[in-house]
Length: 71
Image 1 (tube, rainbow, N blue to C red):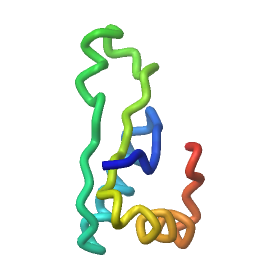
Image 2 (tube, rainbow, N blue to C red; image 1 turned 45 degrees about the vertical axis):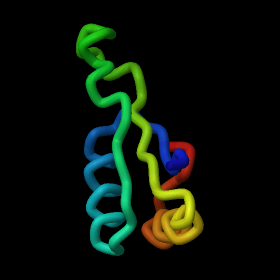
Image 3 (cartoon, rainbow, N blue to C red; image 1 turned 30 degrees about the vertical axis):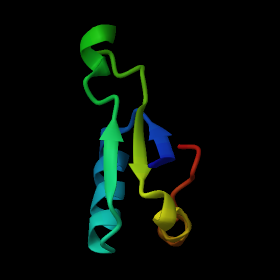
């Protein structure tokens, strides 16, 4: 899997997950539980990972939705 997006915005993560699921693109969100380490401040970003062979399609999906890759 490769990193598609890194953000600490839970709403954006939820939206991206819905977009990817809708297109049948396998994905995972990593570092979700890091908030325990940081004291639940929301400072450490989560990473949205996608299947390497679907990275291009996932990137185009974010582009079409107007989502900044560096959110």
